[in-house]
Image (cartoon, rainbow, N blue to C red; front, side, top):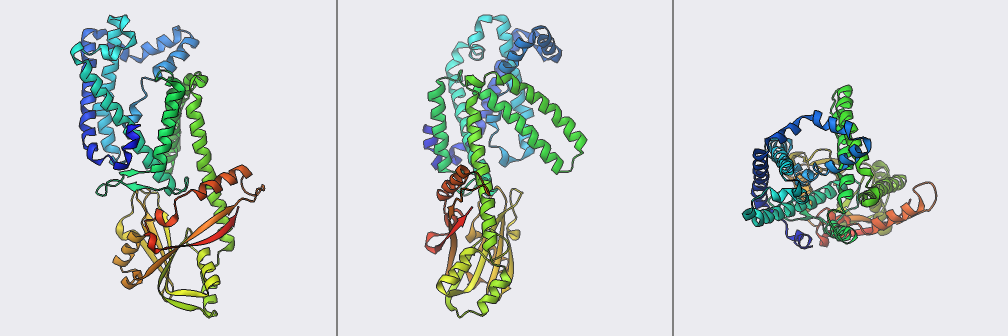
Length: 474
C-alpha cells in the first residue's frame, strides 16, 4: 500500500539507487550459487539437457507434466525486473541480461540444486540455506529492496503501457502527470495506480499467501511468453524478415510456450482463473473503446462538411467577425469538425483567424521537433495544423503550436488572444444490432463520460478552453 501511496511523488530521486541495488542483488545471487556449486560440483551435470529429457521420459507423462508446471516458476520473475526497461533500448537490455542477470540466476539455481543434493532437508527454503547464518538479516533486507524495486518496475511499466494504449486509441484519455520534467517517461497515472492497488489488495485477501498465487503466476507468465512470441513474429514479418525463418524460429518458441501453458493450466481452478479474468476484463474494455471510437468516427464523418463546402458557405453568410484566434481541435485530418460548423450555425459569428488542429500519434517512439507540425492554408487566416507525436511522447497542443511558429509555418501573432474550442460529445447508444451489443454500447458511453477532458489531456490551459456540446448516436 505504501508503494502506491508515494507514486504521485515520482521515483526519479530514489530511482538512482535502483541500479546499484539490483547490481548487488544479482552479484549476491551468483556468489551464493557458486558457493553451493563448489560444495557439490556434480550438480553441473544438470546443464546437460539430455538429463531433463531422460527424466521426462522415465517419470511418466503425468508426473512429467506436473513437473513442468512446477519447474516453470523457476523462470518467472525475470520479467518483473525488466518490465520498464523499454526506455533504454535493445542493446543495454541484452548486455544486462546476458552479462549479469542470466548468469546470476543460473548460478543460484545450480547452487540450490547442489545444496538439496547434500542436504535434502533444506527443501523448504534452499535459497536462504545457501547463505551463512550471519548473512541472513542482510540478505532479507536486500531481498526486500529487490522485491520493492521489481514491484516498482511493474507499476511504472503499467503506467507506460497505459499511456501508449491511450495514444494508440485502445483506452480513454486519463490524467497523466509528468513526475520528472528533466527525464521523459517518468509519469504517474492516478486512475491506474488506484486500480492496481485495489487489484493487489484483492489478490492478497483472496489468496492469502504467495504459495496460493503460484497457479495464477504460472498461467499469467506462460500466457505472457506466448503473446510475446506472437508479437515478435508479427514485428519480424512487418520488418521484412524471411517468413519461413520467422515461422520456424517463432514456431519453435511458441510450441515450447504452449507446453508450459498446458502444464500450468492444471492449476486453473487453484488461482489460474484470476489473471484470465483480469486479462479478459481489460481486453474487453480496450476492444470496446476501439470499436466505439470507430463507430463515433463513422457518425462524425456522416455529419462532417468538406472544407470547400464550408468555406463556400462562409462567403455567403453574413457573419460577425470577432477579434482573436479560434482553434478547433479535431480527431480527423480532413473535413470541418462538427463543433466548428455548429458554432457558426448557433452564433452566426467567427473569429478573425481560425486553426483546425489535429494531434496524431506515429508508430515511432519520438518525432523530431522540426517535424512536429505540418500546416496547410485553407483560406486567408484559415489554417489546418497537423501535429505528430511518437507513442512515447506526451502530446501538448501549446508545444506543438510553438513548433509551428518556430518553423515559420504559422505567423507569431496568430497565437495572441487564442481560444481553443473542443467538442464534448454525448454518446447516445441506439441499442440495435448495427453497432455493438447494447451492453457494450452502454459500457463505451460510460467510459466516454468518465474520460479525461480533451483540453486537459492535450495540456491546454483551462482558461483558454471552450467546450461545444454535440450528441452522437452509435
